[in-house]
Amino acid sequence: MTEALFRSDAYLARCDAVVTHVADDGVELDRTVFYPLGGGQAGDTGWLALSDGTRLRVTDARKSRREGATPDDTLHVLDPASGWKDRLAVGRAVSAEVEWERRHRHMRFHTATHLLCAVVKQLVDGCSITADYARLDFAMTDLLDKEQVQAGLDRLIAEAHPVSCEWITDEEMLANPQLVKSMSVSPPVGFGRVRLLRVQDVDLQPCGGTHVKNTSEIGHVRVAKIEKKSARTRRVVLEFAD
Ligand SMILES: [Zn+2]
Image (cartoon, rainbow, N blue to C red; front, top):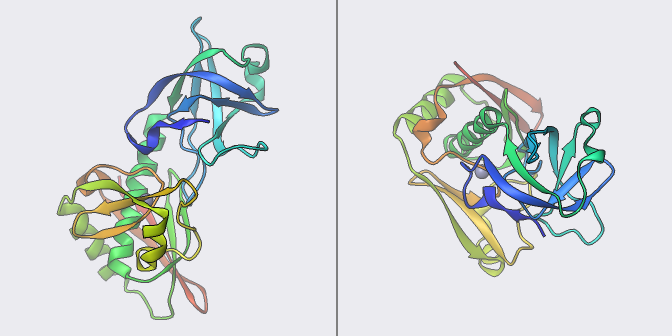
């Protein structure tokens, strides 16, 4: 089983690891700093570095679909042109390194989407977090005022709220359904415990993604677009202003 180091420390950009499984398109490791695509957040890219200095390009990270895989088992998809199949085998030691600048953008956007939930206060019916934009679909029919949403986000970012994680049991999660603010992403149950993401005094909800440790670290986010995605959904798209 892969030890998901990003879950306890999203700032860890590198770790030593050992190959535990080789698949057609990549490998699994005993521990990793790579976040696999999930909860709307894109999978990490980066490199697996070998002791001889070879750096094998990781083009994506995904949850393993191997039979018997546990929820944290992560497939590191490798560039076929890198010749990785000749270099990697079970038991091989590697240094796993995420492409930090891209991941940090995911963390900033992801934290911004939690603020957006607090500003809009409607259930989320779709979510996508990439390095270039974050998109949330809210289940609502009322119009959203772009300037009001922008002002709300600006205020919460400037107020520098601490961001932290805490854990509850699956049973506590099921007993507190009001914590769930997403209709499209099911809470990360199945581990026996559920991770809650708290933006102090702003937002509390189950989330397995990666976040920055303070809202001030998000930087300047622009509400790029608010559109009517369907009769019952409003879509908000965020971009970085810098
Ligand atoms: Zn989150």
